[in-house]
Length: 258
Image 1 (cartoon, rainbow, N blue to C red):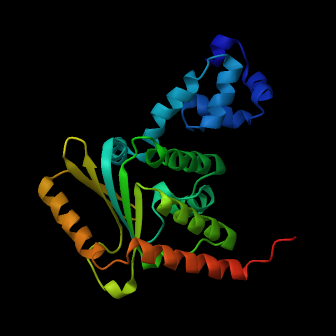
Image 2: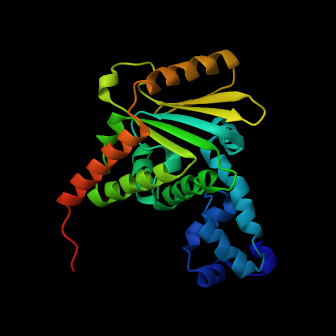
């Protein structure tokens, strides 16, 4: 597209202010870029939102083939149940919290990190659309004992959870340590129910993921989820727990100037 426009790489740099090396990596496919970058290039090339649309299509590839199919199914689901053992579920994360989580996942440069954060944030539209699925998340108590490194980031994330809890299609429940040992420990589980009545599950560890479509295995995982949900705090108790954490963090932060 740059060749068609007659612009040199140097001229494109001048037009967009993006680093020449970064622009070259975008052209060769070494970088996916972000929606913001694509909007800037669309403006320079006069291509409307063509590059932005292509970016959205290519974005799924950043998650790998196994996760790619799961994400397509996620967008089709009418009901979604999640269990999280160590971090806030991606659909509920704030940008600052997501950035810190993804920074720890694997080494990457700033541009690649930003791409992954943008992709994660864009998924939240699933819960905010007019036909949003019913979403239930069961959060292990360990999630709340593994705070973000910056109190302000953690406070923002907890307050975001309280806002999510207010939505009619979102329910959050805390699974306390008193629930004891269980077979969902050590990873996360998502169960999706599709409009056609089919259910699928996704098991995710720190370095791997598995899409489960066998109905027998999905039913076993759903049963495991239900057994632990019976031990979880109610949504109201969970809200009170988070509110108490917010209160404790606020008491430790410097007072805002009046």
